[in-house]
Image 1 (tube, rainbow, N blue to C red):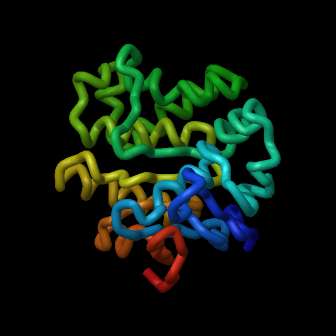
Image 2 (cartoon, one colour):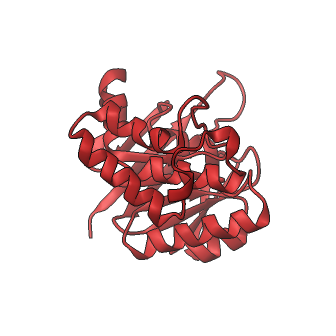
Length: 226
């Protein structure tokens, strides 16, 4: 089983004085594994996710995803890689308000290029699998929080990414919608999708992850079975 994520001695310092956001982090995530990263607010877990997503660059060490060392890429190459290989589900959805649910899902596919008809078929397939067929032509303002997050999941999966990142995916939805998102992540994990989940919710980690890691004070201090 190959590793999708490898971090070697990764550190991140935002200010010249003061403690680092991350210090000497080593981590591997194997293909098909679902890893939950936990820790209190300000511990460094979101910084860790941003580095793995290629949204930020480490001060030291190497971040490798799907065989590519991200900190060796130019900004343009990094953006291309991220679109093709990494899907991201954010806590607050980040949908484009002037696009329908279907068109929001299609955005990453359009940025990568390729066959438009095939992309549309996959978007409709994803929306159907997430129970959103009847909402495909609705704009985000007409969707519930749970529906918005399911659209965000479909968008993250449209390009069949090597890695799915989820940043507090149930943090901005109600309990019922949170249960739906949890079941979706469980199904994705069972299907073999590699997932890295950042959460403060131990129940979400327990239900959706095959392994957990804990970040405290910028250090990866514990990895235990979920």
